[in-house]
Structures are given as structure tokens and as C-alpha cells.
Image 1 (cartoon, rainbow, N blue to C red):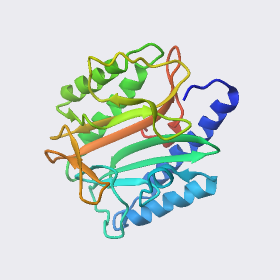
Image 2: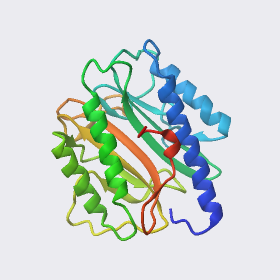
Image 3: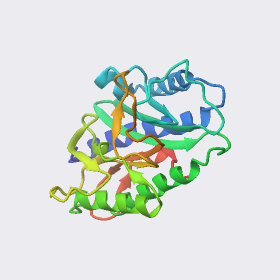
Length: 254
């Protein structure tokens, strides 16, 4: 959305702090032996406490308050009592919600406990690439240039990007224009970031795959060539200089 008045900025700041804080608290709450359903319900309680509504649940009828993807799941993992968290699991939590007509979105991947499967390099690459991408965004910058930066940095780290998942505009709904802030360059895309707009920037960095495919449950996405995928996401306000990171309360870079 385009921020045109103070009240809109305040609305976006409030909901962004809520989803950021929820993500941070869920990450801290995750423990070995817990089900992803337990973790999701904890997140749902935090959102309710703030008076916020889960965006995937409200918008798409998603069976959970948040998307929790483990190990080989790339995105949109369904919280389940049958999915029990284990030492060294690669976990992604994606929290998006609505409050007073404003929507915000954020996510992050992390390793639970000891990194016994060596997932940390992939997690670090995703985090660092997101930071670098956001640092290069300002009004007038081509969206395709940020995609080029993300893919180039992924290759430098020895990884790939998922090409059919993307960042997006956010604000008055969960997904708005620009719809496709991709993790690679589409040369024909002449679109540019606009000053005073709010967008969700996300990295999808992978070990093997370049396309996410849907499982039979109608939600969960996995890589087309297997392997692992990490995602990190912040909702930002585009300015003339350095963007304002609205969801920084998630502390995904700490």
C-alpha cells in the first residue's frame, strides 16, 4: 500500500510489531518434543491477545494461525499434532496478520537446538542475503535488480533460489501490488519500488531445488529436486534512502 497519512503509518507499525513479536516469541517457545500444532496455538494466543487476526486463516482458510514448515518442507507447512520437533530440525515460521484493517507479514528459518545436520550455513545465507537486498531498496530501484542481487548472492554462497515464490506488496490486504518481488531477475520486468509503499521482502534460498511444488494436502510446498529451503521475510516501508523495517521486533538478524 501507499502510505499517504500518519494514521496509515501508525496502523502499519502496530500490526508489524505484533507479527514481529509473535514470530520472535514462537521461535523462543519452540522446544524438542513439542508438536507444531502446540507451537502454532501458542502463536495464535499471542495474536488474539493483541486483537489481531491470522492472515492465512482469515484470507485463505488455512488450517492454522501460522505456517510452520519443517526440514524438507519449503513453505506453507500445516501445523499438526503428528509433527514433533526434534534436535537439529530446520524450522520455518511465517506469521502474517491483520489489525484494524492493516496487514503485515514476516517469517524466519532457524535450527532447533544443536545444528547436527549442518543447516546453519543455509540459514545464515538466507538471513544475510535478505539484509543485503533490503539495504539496496529505495524508491526508483528496479524490482528485477533486487532479484538479481538475491540470486547472485545465493550462488556465491553455493546455493540456489526458489523461482516461483516471491515477496509482495502488503498493507490493506495480505498480497497487493507489486505481486512478484522474485528471487531472480526477470529482465522484462520494468517495475520499480515506489517511495512510501509497504512491501514484504522475502528470500527463498535452497540447496537443490529451484521450484516449489505443492503436496496432496493442498498447502505444503516442497522443492522439486528435494533438499532444503530457508526463508526470511521482513515488511518494510520504502523511502528515498534506507528502508524502515517495520517488523524488526522479530529480531531475525540477532
